[in-house]
Length: 336
Image (cartoon, rainbow, N blue to C red):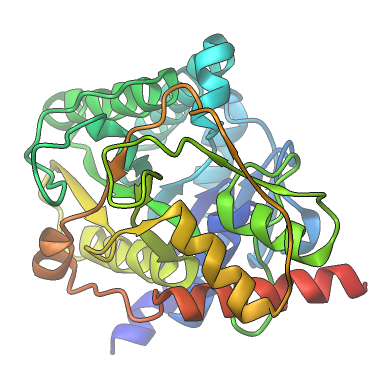
């Protein structure tokens, strides 16, 4: 019965040709939903479009967004489209506010005009900033981002909250931590340009396409001096988005919820580098460098609310599974 219900419902994925977006479209397809990918391909890839329908357009185009929502009778939006590099946001903040905040404003205007109230928003653990006085970050902590990227995501969360009462909005903001890994079947994976995420950078060093890997900061207040993050397999993230969509489609009650998607366990940068070296079987130069601006020392999720509200658990997020899938995908791309 649940699969049949999904077949009658349409999900529009904004940024569905991107890294997490493409994996989520695959998961939505497998769950029986009709999917519409909306992307401007500024960072997404055309060969990662797995939606039943594709609309090429910009997040700021209110008219096209509204037309797409109505044409495909969209039941729920999943919104990924954003600039994401925290360090770059410190150096050039304005594009982050223009795209992440103003772009989402256009989307909310289009949704309101089309009479659509349901949205799953790709938020971030950067909302928590440097909350180091708790062992795991939970959703009731104050939002205290320390870089413009985090600021932009918190601003969107605040917009979603503000739209609940006047517009009947039903919104779930998924705050996730370090997305990584790749589709186990090799259909899609991580390939940003330029690449800024740790695991694919280390893999590039292991493949010999990058001369070395830098560890940015070895004097953090952590056991080995390097940053600690909660690394979550992109397949688990995609499953979390499907669970959030199903949650929204099962109710008509307006509201806003922030929900962490994470494992509850942290790994240091040095541990990740060692895992890639071990699984790839390759040696590569590792250089210790200065801290990057805007990097908190520790970000680890408390995933309790995701368990309780969405029935979601991370099943594929061991560092071995993450690196094995990411390595296999990177080797496939390199051989093509």
